[in-house]
Image 1 (cartoon, helix red, strand yellow):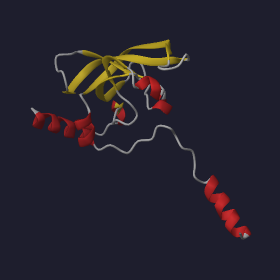
Image 2 (image 1 turned 135 degrees about the vertical axis):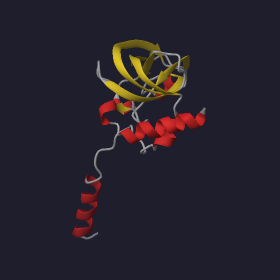
Image 3 (image 1 turned 180 degrees about the horizontal axis):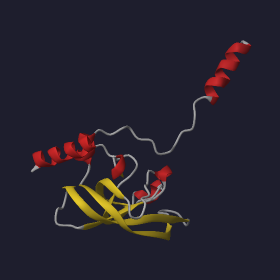
Image 4 (image 1 turned 120 degrees about the vertical axis):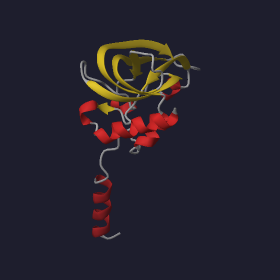
Length: 164
């Protein structure tokens, strides 16, 4: 192999960049709407971190299981159960597992879905079912409200009207 070929190979190998375990395709508004059970704008009013140690199925090993539950006061309801004024959103809270963290007192547009699988980066724990809860992750369009373009909210409201 020529020196230039080896050098090119090495440059390509090191120029790949950092790969993150959580990588998502850019979801369109319509797709985000379809995939979500509950969409709203709301303000974070409470944050509760939990950590438990759980047995790994089929082994004698244990794993620490971390998650965070945020309580949101709903300021504008878009899709889901209209009668609720507050909702709890549980996530693993770690970006590498697609979890999210939110700032107390900040307002967000939340695209959430109901699941009965654990909010954890550990795949063997995800398969175990738990009491259903609402969650969101980095692969949804969830974002701080100040970063949301007005046209996104308008489109969501149009989609919600069509669904009724």
